[in-house]
Amino acid sequence: MRIKYWMALAGIALSVGLLITVFAKLDWVAFWKTLQNVDFTIILFVWGLLAINIAVRSFRWLIITGRPLNEFSAFWEAGNVGYLGNTIYPARAGEALRIIAIHHFVKLPFGHALSSSFIDRLLDILILGLLAMLVVTIHGGHLLNPTLMQWLPYFVAGGVLSIGIMVHFAQPIADWIDTRTWQGNWRQKFQRLLYQAIDGLTTLKRPGQLSLILLITFAVYGLDAFIRLQMMHAMGWDLPLDAAFTVIVFVIAGSLLPSAPGYVGIYQVACVMALGFYHISTTDAVAYSLIMQLSEFIVIISQGLISISLRGFNLTHARREAESSYES
Image 1 (cartoon, rainbow, N blue to C red):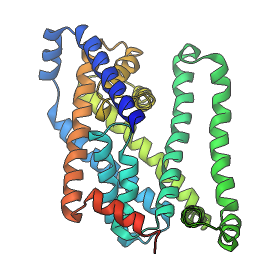
Image 2: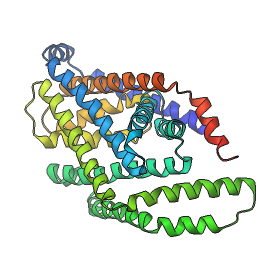
Image 3: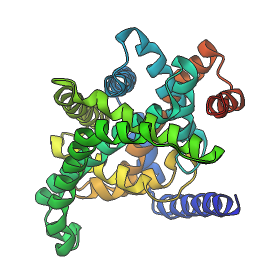
């Protein structure tokens, strides 16, 4: 608990420090002028696209679990709870929240929810690796250490191979776990959790399912790039598509650092660094980052509150229900 406390404190301190550094370099006259010239009609369009992107991500998670399509609303609501958690809590707490939420909403076995969430995020990491290679190729090798650049393709290939191995051997491992007799109450709970997690991976062996999941993943990031490009158009910039990919890579890489809830500060610096390759000033890049991040907050918070209201979601009650499922 003390480690989490100090990590959260360090993240907040880093975010505040970065915000002070960035805002100290702003030309405030140019900043307000930039905001006044933003096309807010496009921003409203972006809000709709952000909502669609969350829905597509929720659909991918549903496909990964192999659950029926009539449960899509539950996955959408659980996803909203997760995004809301990442926005208001530090240390990506939303990842745990969405797992607990989907377990609560559709009684998905906790281990299955855990493994499906892991695969969901692993797919994001793989695409990030591909985008990172693209960005490095476009902007030159000075972005990364040459040795790291050489290993990046192997990292991506290793991730794809890992998914394949996990899916291929999931059923034999699940069968082996199911036939074992583990002594001790906590060992039996762990056995059940492990069996559920491994058994959840077997749904990916259905014909065409993995291909569909990969196709949806590419669609998610294609839409994400289109969203960021539209926001650039709202700012009056005529930038190429790779500018959107560059922003995505820098923002996601920055989110891995400890920060305040919502990645405030980290988000601004990431946009300044990414857009600097396209000769966008620090002032304009900060304005872009604030509008983009505020748009994400509006969509995420509103949909999160709607989902909580619809489900009457209570984190404490849901956690107790998840824990009690292993005692029955």
